Every structure is written in C-alpha cells, then in structure tokens.
Length: 140
Image (cartoon, rainbow, N blue to C red; front, side, top):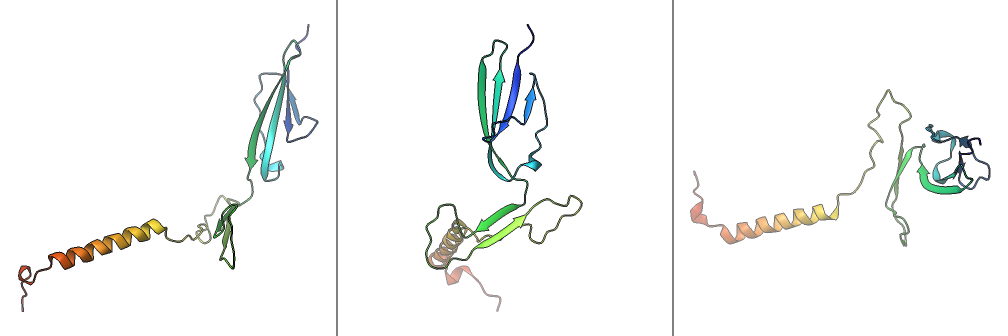
C-alpha cells in the first residue's frame, strides 16, 4: 500500500489548494503576493487510512506602510468637527533612515498634566505654609 498521507494548504475561501505536500513539510510562505488585510490559512491533512483533519489559522498581512491615525479611535462616536492627523511610514528603503515623518505627533497624556499640576500645587502649599522671614537672611 502506497503512502496516502498528504497535506493541502488553502488560502481564505479558495476551493483549490495553493500547495500540496507529503508530510513532514517545511516551506516559506510569501505574503508579498497577498493583499493587506485579514486572511485565513486552512490546512487539510489526510492520514494513511484516509481520515482528514482540518486546522484553520487566521492571520493579518501588512506589507504596505504602517498607518497611524490620531484623533479618531475604532468605533468612536463623534460629532461636530474633529481634527485628525494621519501618518504613513514604511520600510521601503533599507539604506537610508528618514527622521522627518517617521513619528506620529501625539498630545501629552492627561496623566502627565495631572502629575505636573499636583506637584505645582504641593510646592505652592509647602511654600505658603512653611515660609518664614526669619529663616532667610539677606546679604544686603
């Protein structure tokens, strides 16, 4: 009896496999030919006695530039006019790094402002409560 073990690999909902192998297999999966977005790899393996096993692996391809958006979150409810900053940067050139446009500007977080105000309020409180003219001698 010949070896009937086979592994078929499908991409998304395609009915024809893009690869067929005899196990064990090791291959390089080239994602540059797949459009960016969510995809699913379906692996169907057939054993020697003809029993099939199926495994699906969801994954996301991002070969294009990374896109950062400041000012609008996923599923956010908005009204009126909102300022939005969009930046896209990728790694097209390996020999040169461009600093301009490499970082997306973001506002200072609210917790930093709260910490700064708290520290300033404590310093002012300490100065008002413990300032005494006799503790400081003038050179004049």
